[in-house]
Length: 268
Image 1 (tube, rainbow, N blue to C red):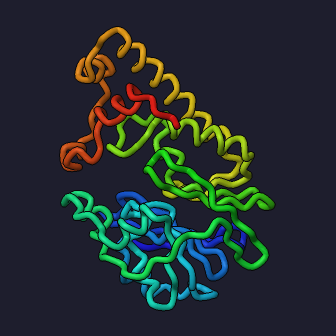
Image 2: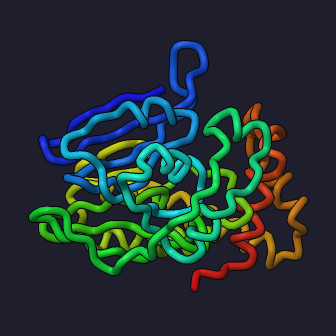
């Protein structure tokens, strides 16, 4: 699936997804500003991305991190565009991991890219000037794109999609995600361009709700750990409902990953 929405006549939201029934399973947002694209959507929308003729044409693609819903669409913009990414993300783009069947269905299996350029510290797009900022936590390497004059933050997956996040991926560092969200609030963004929710105006409450939930959960889990409870016992005590698709993720998502991250408490 593919859709385009214009935000304030400046930023174009490019939405990609896989269709299930009459609806998208989950939208992944990429954002075009001038000749620049922040993230690239998923491989399952490759044909639609190839057919996209935005004005002006996209010449630069800046990848926030190495998850397939954010970089899978990159080949659609080659060879006319250059792909920019950090060093860890570049390795993933050049040698994408083989996805479990579930994720290959939801997003599509990415193909290897051969020419990836190091992401700069600053990005100029017309009259706009972006700072590339560290938003790691969701992954070991993830970047956001901050335009201080406009108060715009292209935040990728720095802010969890559900307000009550109850599972995680193995590489997610939940304490660090809390720290990053607090840092985002300190920037006082006027618009958060989220990787799955789209543009969010005046996002402080949206972010704070997630900080509060995760901080409370962190305290519960650490207290249980201090009492000598094992990870399995903590999971049983929390008694979080497991979504139907969880077994199909082949442990790429798990409640255990979330608990383990809080027990390790590595926010650095």
